[in-house]
Length: 168
Length: 330
Ligand code: SF4
Image 1 (cartoon, chains in turn green, purple):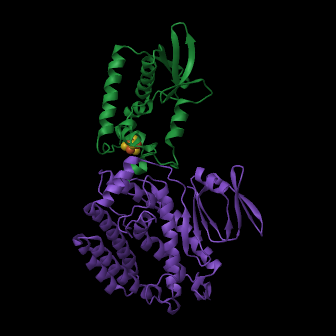
Image 2 (tube, rainbow over the protein chains, first blue to last red):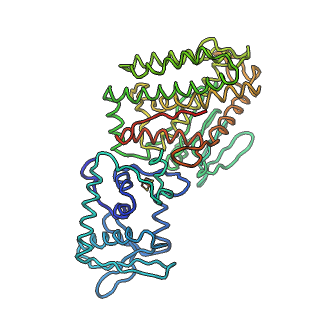
Image 3 (cartoon, each protein chain N blue to C red):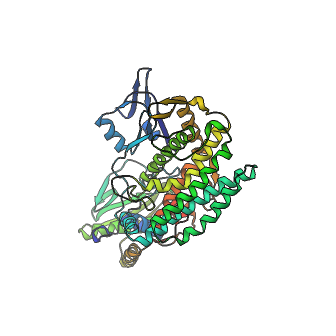
């Protein structure tokens, strides 16, 4: 793996909270089974995060929905089917916010769970930034491991496109 | 799971919008591309660049067989899954003699154990194969001791000799005696069937490799010259006994293939088209049948087992888990 390939992305942040093994696999371009009957990674992200027409903003490797532009700045975020993977989504969004901040753009984040009639603010405050920093370091640590972390059976495995890879 | 398309008639395969279009003298038909995993071509086929580009995008592998049913080659679209990491690991395990031997031995061991299962089955059905079974049992332990690839290859050849000599007893049909293993061209009916079945197995393994990050040109048992595909040959060793040979025994046992299924031609013996069709149809059925997988906890097809084998290889190369070949348990 060369240095150029090592890059923390929003996707990796998202997976970090679900399964560190998956972070390693994705980071090493060991892409999941493309014709997995349950789900492919791409479709999964699409279904869960972008269920409808939207305005997209691309920053670096990340894409996010623009909800509105206000006097205080941009409101970006994502619509999620459920709050099941909330901490994943929160930190992924926080990651996007920090990518924007690095480019001098002030923004706030919003997670929406229309089915549950809820939304949640994500702010880039000191605490989140500290956490984000920790997560990014942790992701890099995982990526530099010579072999992936061992698989652990979790409920996500059932839907995971790596399942046959992990459990064969 | 995507389907394998077998093309026996001659004609032209082309791209029409977003589907495949197949036109022959007998007729024309559209083939849904999303449904197709690989295409095996036995007839005379005309293709153009536009089609090949389309197949590349759709990640479909084409395998060509000549008029006599021998494998000629494959159109293997540029590797679509690429992991520099995996390629380096794969090469590393090839270049380091010791590491290469570890993998090669496991292929031989897996093949031998599956051969043993096949023989055990017929032994249980009162076929007199005890001598061969015994000989093979005695050759499994020495696999560990092999110090280099050539000794290992010799041992493997030895195992195979004993195995093939049990065929006459298993088949029990004077039309299909084994004599000796002959390849291009095979000199008798049984050898013709074995060659045909093995070729199909190689192409299926190749198609499965295409779905992983492995490079089919780097094999471990079969040495690599980077021009030919060899990893699929390695992998096929494990599955030939339990898929191809069992299929042959059953086709002969049910008289679905008889000596009338062959033509004698100047180059040797060839299967009639009807027999080839019968063979591939039954192979396809076999690949679709599922068995329960202990660790995955749900049924997986034989075809999927081949893929799982590749996943296990990848994990071995990654240094995660030592590769252990699949062994049938019945
Ligand atoms: S199958 Fe389970 S252990 Fe493997 S990557 Fe997916 S979630 Fe992680």
